[in-house]
Every structure is written in C-alpha cells, then in structure tokens.
Image (cartoon, rainbow, N blue to C red; front, side, top):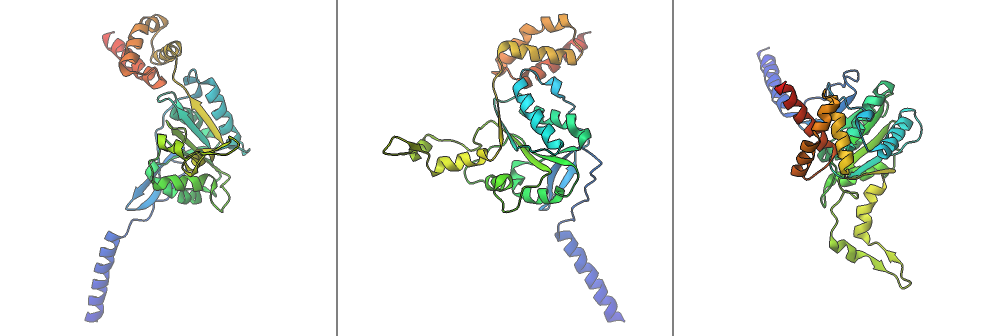
Length: 290
C-alpha cells in the first residue's frame, strides 16, 4: 500500500510539471461576446479573443472617398447576402480611410451577421487554422490584415497566397480577406527588378520571375481599391465634419480653417487622419476655454 501511495504521489508531481510545460488549451470562443475578434497566441497556441469595444465610425463619417466607399460597401453587402464577392486589397496614401472603411462596414452589417477577425502579419501562417475554426459558423467573416507589407523571405507572404487562391481545398464560403497596404504589390520593389524583364525579338516585353512573384500576391485579391492624397478643400471639408461631430458650430468651424491648414503643414499631410486629430485637439481646447 505504501508503494502504491508513493507511486501516486510521484505521478501527481510529474503531471504537475508537465502541465507547467505544456501550452494551455485554447479557450472556447464566445461568439455572442463581440462582433470583432483578434487572433492571439499563448505559448504557441492560437485563439480568438473577443474585442468588446470597437470603433463606432460609420460610412457617413468618411468624406471625399465616395467611389472607394461604394466599391467596398457593395462588395461587403454582396458577401453578407451570400452572393459572390471578392477578397479586397486597399492601397494608397496613408491616413485616407482604408482601415476606417472596413470598420465602418463592420458597424453597418454586424446586425446582418458580419464579423471581423484581425490578424497580425506575423500570424498569417495561422490563416489555415483560423479558416478551419470558423468555416462551419453561420456568420460571415472578414479576416482583416491592416498595414500589410512584406520584406523578402517572410513566411507570411506565402501563407497569404495559399489562403487567397492557392490551396487544393476550396475557399470557405463564409470568409473573405480584406487587407490594407501602402504598397500596391505588398513587397519592396527595386530598380534591379526591371533588369529581369525580357525583350522579345518582335518588341514584346515579358516580366521576369522576380516581377511575376511580386505581382502574383496582389493579383489574387479580386478587388483593388486605391486611395489618394486629399486636396486642400477636401481636407477642410473633413475637418469641418469632425469639428461638428465634436460639438462645434458653423462659426467655430470657419474660424478653425487657418489653424487646420497650419496643423496639416506641420505634419506634411492633408489626410483624413490628420483632420480627425486636428478636430480633437481644436475642439478640446475650445471646450476647455469655455
């Protein structure tokens, strides 16, 4: 009996040491806790973490990007209604509303079953696991990769290619990938890449393998949407929208124009993000002075 007790005691101690080494089991996903989730890692094991509080930005808040807004809104609406829709790559000038547009679409269609999963670039090799986890769910999922770009040799590049259109398995019907980037082709482009172009005897030009590889990822996104820097009047329109959002009247909006232009000049950008930051600062100072 004593030997049995000693064996059990040693076995319990061994199990305790093993539990300390082994990664914890992934927590069950509470699908009713949120409409947005983040893919997180804990001791090498991935899981979906609910995001209880998300940005309340709406489509009406996004000014002077009407064409881009119409394209993304239409594609998302088709997806939510279980009609054919494309993976989307949003590229162009910084601060012009690429990420905000995706968040606004989530707010617009969350009540219709749209959900969003944010995945960091370093975790893109887990895309297969994420799709397996949600493929049988009734909701419609946008996998969101923000500010995406790759350096040469990064593993997430090939994982994203496979998830978009490179696996032997069919793409899950309830998942789309929306990515934002400042680079159209997602990889750095060098002058030396041009040397790989092949000039045929008849004058036709064929891109070399290096160029083909860099183009191949972006081409797997069915919808490309480009964003451009704002003109001065567009920037001031956005400033006015956000100042009114923060409670300023028309007279205050007019008086803020000069300060708004100086603010943009100091930052070297007339973007929607800069307009929003100025409006927060200016309206906050006015409220404090009142």
